[in-house]
Image (cartoon, rainbow over the protein chains, first blue to last red):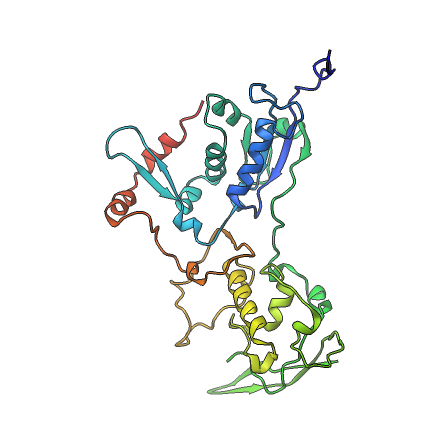
Length: 178
Length: 165
């Protein structure tokens, strides 16, 4: 036998991975999730093998877009009949169901074949940090984030603000409110 | 080092209101560097900043939300332009929630025009075009189709989008 990979019990076992979608760009997050859903991070990968993992995504309510994509991007649905194409902006789509944007981005990023709907059943989306216990006990590893989430100014304490070095002194007569 | 600031103080005594500016002394640390050629405070320290660096940007901002003028800060032209872009990107991302224009001014924006309760936006570091800040409709869709798209029946979308095994 050339390799002893097939002799091991756990080569094709499914792992459960956690992914935090807070302040992550949605299209780039979807590319990263698809890599783990298909199992492309494994050396055993082949498109005909079914070696993908489960991915649990939390905080999908706080996913991010760039520029004006919340207003500009449209998610369309065609029922097949004439003049029945319906489109909704990403803002309305997200307001309807906060897990729907990530699901739609991942669905469009996966390869377009018969295996796509089976892979989507291994994607578990939650708007908050609350996960049911039967899923939480399976979790093994964490997917690294795409972008470091920024921090707002009011989230810093006043001790941290006082410790920041200053670069210039405004003159005493300067009135910044005008 | 002594850092001076002029807050406006209002006192009411019956029908009389007194508005006065009071000089207060607060502690501010300044990193002193060798600056023989008189470069600007950013160039002399070889600083690089993005829209995420709130601790740098907040020093060059007014409480209004605008950039301080160059006569006050002493920043050169190229760095002043970068500061302006980075602050606009950070404000769109909602990193400065307390820096708002005063309500009731002529120059201030109305409360209805300010987009409150936005979702998370972010700006990539290579973002240069300022025109995209405004909410422009989708350019690829002609006006006739856009009228048709805007008629949305949420019941149909809900049933069609959830068609999954």
